[in-house]
Length: 197
Image (cartoon, rainbow, N blue to C red; front, side, top):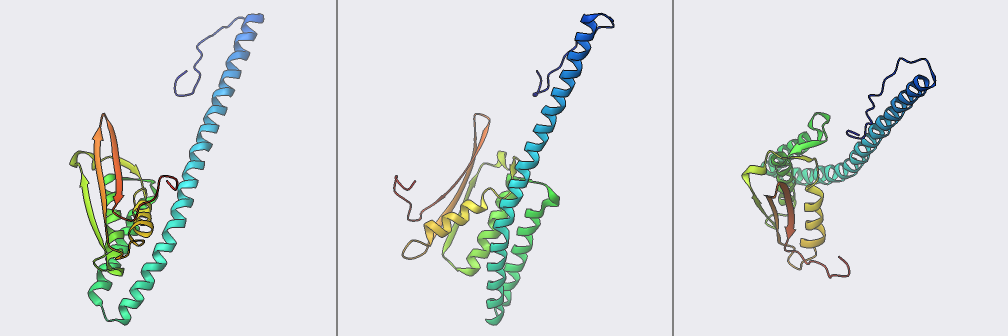
């Protein structure tokens, strides 16, 4: 067995019952391997579809809020903030689209989060402090795209905005330990009790 595929090397040119049995067995193994491949490929397609569905749910909400903010900035005559918001939004979506790929480097994923936080900082000036403590050696690691932004958004919405002063710190820490890359998102928000957790 190699990668789920059963490899059989039994051969026979015999015309007797053993030859028929061996040829039938090989056809059966070929059919089993074909079915295994089809199930495996279907599972990959399903996972990608689920990921894209999740990403599609995240993006329109953020786009709507950002465009609404740009509209209000325009009414207030805040051209520099509009410029920063539109550039950040453009780069944010360029990374999401990523030529149809489902992965980014960790460096690109962190840039993606940075654009998100920059837009939030325009919406709520001086409320969010962003700290990044990521080892240089793991920045080229490949990760599924949009894995950090939902965590950061959740930390802001349910941690920082729940504080009385609505100010807080988001920290992303990344490191490698025993060949495994770890990325942590933390905040100094209100937190939760053990039962809720």
